[in-house]
Image (cartoon, rainbow, N blue to C red; front, side, top):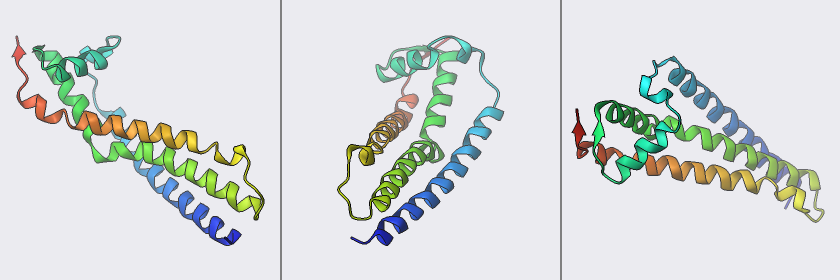
Length: 144
């Protein structure tokens, strides 16, 4: 393939990276502006609440409010822009390295970008798993 092809794909990946980065930045700034719950300041509060929600255990009112907030934050489609930014950046790296080769045999350096791709895919899957917990919020028993 021509080097122009890899260069074009690299530029497209860079443009997608900037779009996803701007959306992700907007989303995180919006989250930073929200007031925090006192329960959220405890150490390992989020994993504990999510674990209770997955196992359908009873929760206190504070835990339930925090679980609602976590599911809303992780279930927002804008939250997927964060792993998509990482994926697009690594795609840009791979395509730019392939364009730089100009027909030479690729080395392992050119495929280092695959590691962040796998990481971002895992992060996106975790966000989608948290989105499915929205249905369990309706059936959760709240005590006190």
